[in-house]
Amino acid sequence: MVYSNLEDFVTEIHRKIGILTPNEIDMQMIADSLNIKPHFWDESSQATESAGEHWIFINEILSLMEQWQDFGHELCHVLQYAGNQHNLPLKFRLYQEV
Image 1: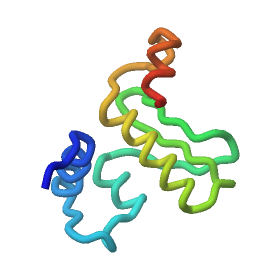
Image 2: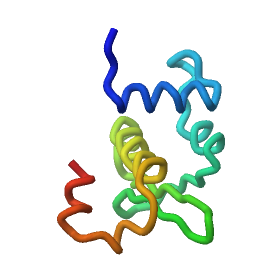
Image 3: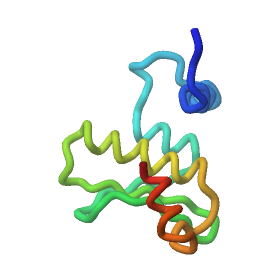
Image 4: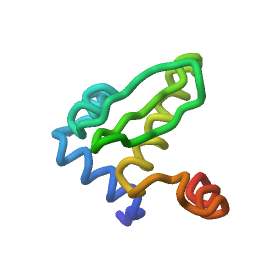
């Protein structure tokens, strides 16, 4: 079977943090394993880095499915994009959101 680069990337992360079966997938466990601090709040979801610590802020009003989607999206920013996204040109930031 042929997998996309993203599927290979996710599979490798799962392997590194010890996820072997779908029922082991847990947002808090993934965050802890990757040294990311999740936080739920009433604003839009986003990821940030400060003093070498990574934070993912998830909108607490969203459904659990939407929270998972946002967590995965923001996790991608933490793991694949370096630096402060606000220092990048607007068009490039928008391109990353697609």
